[in-house]
Length: 143
Picture: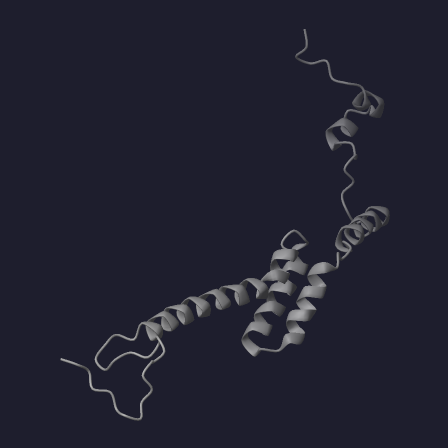
């Protein structure tokens, strides 16, 4: 049976136009492409979004936690300034202030006499009456 074409229709139709009742191949290809593109763009977005945390992973714990919180805030609020702040904080190497301050505090406690002195002689050695004997090595149990 010959197909009847309307007299005003063009005689050559483009390949993407399907006949009635046929499967639209172009539509199916575009749907599959869009699903893959959405997943690819979403994966790229989340990887880019976690870039500051990846950079700060090898830094101090406090710096890493600050960068992670800023990244989470930027993800939930969609404010780019938080992500930029997290990226800058991740790229800057913050100095370690707590270790020297802790050492200074322990030294001041030792000078003030509030902390136990690690090299103080034991009270049993002082009770024996000779301080010089406690400074000599013990020979007990040696043959």
